[in-house]
Image (tube, rainbow, N blue to C red; front, side, top):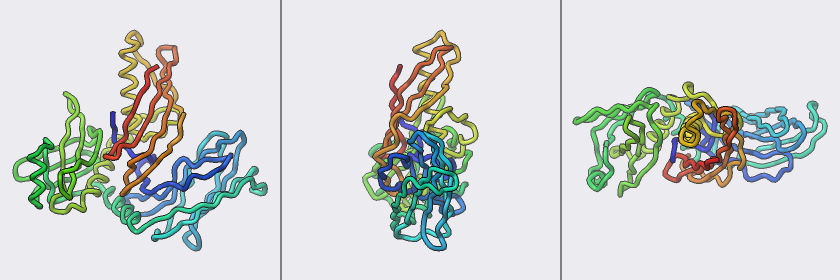
Length: 344
């Protein structure tokens, strides 16, 4: 099963760059980190830190140097996490120093551990962030787009003609495509996956999988006239899909790392299993989620996670009896996240 998501979970803004190097500490772990951008084009450094000790910790995080540096301090209870976010006045290619100081007291007089690391950004990384910011400003419109209902040999040969007359408009409400022959509308809330497929040429297909009454349907969009728009279109589609469900999906209890759509699809699969396994229970309910294997193996290319996995345990109240499902997540190199579910 695959659902649209990123491996990073910052609500309406996207984490585009890798986290810090794997640090070695007996007190904390960095679950995610990097730089995010919002639809206004502003940059923010973010680190999500977990206290893995048995005592409360006070942590000071300093990112950057000179006038552009920022510093944040927060208390983290045992086994809890905290988000550390700093606004950046500018982001240039090079190295951003990161200093984490761990204290035993609120006055920050008893230091337990100093950690020094850095994040490294290339010009390509920054261009990716700029594209992200632009693509998140909905509605977004793209010209010169080719539409294909079936991705077969005919469509592969179509890419030899470098121009198309279609227009693609993406909003939080709908994905709308119009050309000389057709007009197509897909509600953004129905989108289940956005991925790329090789079209035998320089401009890949952007494959949108969406829900219809009789099942899932796939269509392809191809930026023939402006191939460089491909990445922006993917970002716009993902932003629209997230925006369409952000305020309509009740968040799951507990520690799950998934963003709203990933939570929704995981919950739907588990409750479908419950219907088959315990038909006499009319209203099973998910009551807890726990991370049992932290996020690891992350690899990001052109702003998209192509590797990375983690595992959780989802607990269901089956009309008074608690049962646990194992849930594993893994990034798919073509886009989206694969979900594996182990029944109780």
